[in-house]
Length: 124
Length: 107
Image (cartoon, rainbow over all chains, first blue to last red; front, side, top):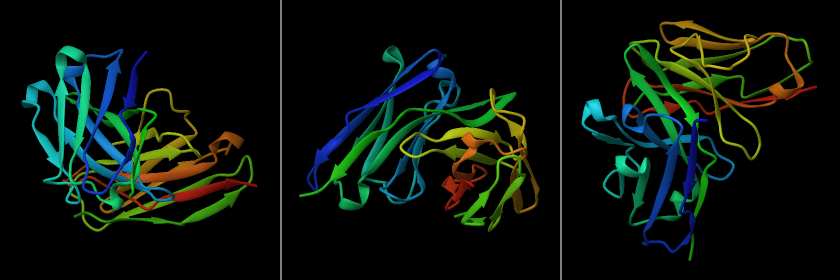
């Protein structure tokens, strides 16, 4: 069974740091792009960033609101995705979802599997 | 950035009805548009990719279409479990962006 399980959320003060993890199972992790998407309380979905697959050298992309503060990484030996969040601000308060993206010819399915999410609250 | 505008913002329909949600992109070159369903307190679920292709396991009453900058999601023979918020998303260009969502209520 394909599964994504996020962890690491919690309460952090403004200016602080937090690292989220996402454990992947049931599929060939290295073959897939992986995304982080967040959702502030009562709001819509916002793309945070992406790491590409092994064939594309695990390169990364970020949304403007987090670029320079957040870093996405992955550990193929642990089938895990990470989101290092620094210089957190109150606007970063959200549920953070780990999302699998299938993007290898001919399987260009986009975002196809979502984790259950982990909650980050930035508050003093 | 590509802006996505969904309409309507909310709608209400009866079981058995057919409903359509539209998503207009400010600009887009390819039909890399996806649709997601989200129920309260749950993670989004992927429904449609590439404008009109069904993700694995999604019921055939869901369909997508579109061309140019206008895309739509149609749900035929509405079922009680189809309530929730529906989002479109473009993955034609970075940054990836989502529409603001359409809330569907079952009467």
